[in-house]
Image 1 (cartoon, one colour):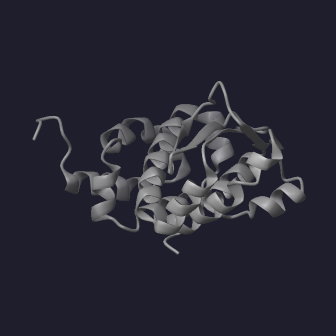
Image 2 (image 1 turned 90 degrees about the vertical axis):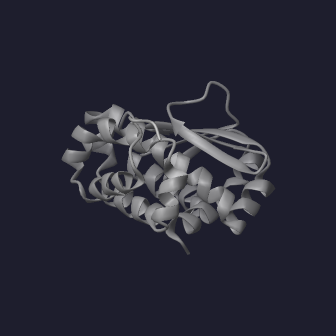
Length: 194
């Protein structure tokens, strides 16, 4: 083991600590804590199988709009960590994996219209990746309030109902957009351990 590598037990402690922090503490400490976990989420999820569910719960409780405006770097590193976990869950959960395979290849950006929050997602060859910032070339862009975008990722909002109720805007071909509701539903279920 490298001398600068964090032990698994310490990673678990860091993850537990982050899940219990207030939004203010997260904004202050996230950028120093996440790099210790990044790249080791798979290993951490072996020891903490409920980690994705707990992250989704914490994300639902957070004031992400405020965090995106006041500590965008913290939100960016958290987004990287979240998508690392989503990718792993996509490999492990058969229903989510099938939804990804059925979706084909899709690139999309998320843009909040009330905060600096931006992110992207790519589905390719039955796998999903994502992260902070926007991709240059995408098939779709989803724009809406920060709270709505978070609910779309965590399953707090049905994508079809949200679109019909104009909770968010979808830019791009509707045929491609229609591939996403099942993916988003299966992703939320897999993250919540349903």
